[in-house]
Length: 608
Image (cartoon, helix red, strand yellow):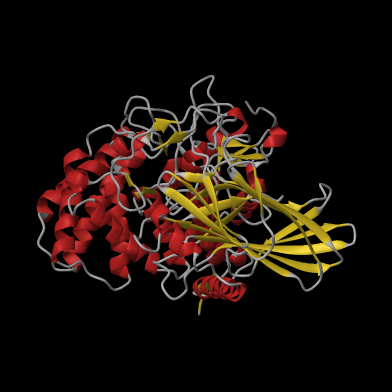
């Protein structure tokens, strides 16, 4: 079993590729070590990220192990350019998941890799080791013509097309060795196809001209999307890069927004807190909708609103806290015992048992998102209003119950303050919508419930001695989720109670300039939670504490990769990223904090 850190690059070593359907992670050394097709919650075809020896990979790299690599995304895109240099040779590799610019909802399901010679001669080697179904299935390899191979197994198949010589390696894999010189331009396309369509697809392989057109179309599509808005402040370019990462997590066809494109990257190396984040959480996606809307990208918010209504079957009673990318409800958690895990962090899980949890904040997240949608000039139709009525009534009915909370605790449910506040938000926004949209609703009952919820929070969720809100009713502990209370206007940022709460959160949870979510029980450990650190920066900025806000913001930004990507957590001892990557919640919180800091200094939104 693999146990050497040298077999597993740091999480920060990876770049994200995406087409708003699927995702892939590419290492600095040119190896695709994680890829799920045709959707990011499908089984993997490359999973070396989670098992260095058995997961499968797609490496395209210089033969010289001493070659240097410099990476960047092409401006405004998720198209990766890696420049390799060795001796007198230099070449570029351009990687992307191609986008069908004529119909982005109908993807090519294609990973495209283009090699360009720049200077001198540089020798490359290719290893394509596909392992379907999370490393469990070795493919049946077939040759269909010069440079054209298929790799099939179970209900998965890949069609590989190259305009250079490709060889077989053993019974299942492909390899190549070739040199590039100035002016050379070589193409390697790998498309996901259903197995019964392999022959037809292989009979009409894409030409180099077609592949160049797809690459140009992908670049143009990303630039058109990212040009919608930018923040006119020094933090603007980083915020736009985060927006591009979030867009990659939003499924163009269904409207779902995934929390992350990976599963089981650990919250603690060698530990068991390894979860599958490739699904659409209502909370995270609602946060994403808010963040993208704040910088001018509203279509994703509207598409997600439709997704939730469809997936919940139009009733709050059938609402789950998360769904599959297509709206799937059954997300059974399974441990894949044949995979070692990143640096032997097992188990590797697919599915997520949290899908069956009671998390009361989802009612408020949806109502807050709908309220923001209404503020942009929309009003619910009759069907949608019935759904909203159900949501508010569910909050009124259930707010007294303990739940698993924002952090999806797997122990006993508690009366979390953040959950109660979001129930208050659900009722408050329902009242406002009914009044402004002239809709019928049980307003007297709702107003009574809204007052009762606030009274309970201010009595049982508030430590009067210290003058601060607390994690749960009757508790003295702090929780970084309390930083979200002013975002939903339960209390204003500059309210004295909130100022004291921010200070108490920092005192109890700050580690090396970053925040923990909450203090874990003795013997348990996890990294600093980066979204919480960005929440802190936003709070401080909106309280007028500019120097403190800038210090926290810059410290948190410094945990990102050279490509501007953020993980879920950060180990302040080792300086390494932890958790699933890239993490949507961190990126959206980065945007919100950048906007708050920008507004303090007169920044404005520039809309194309």
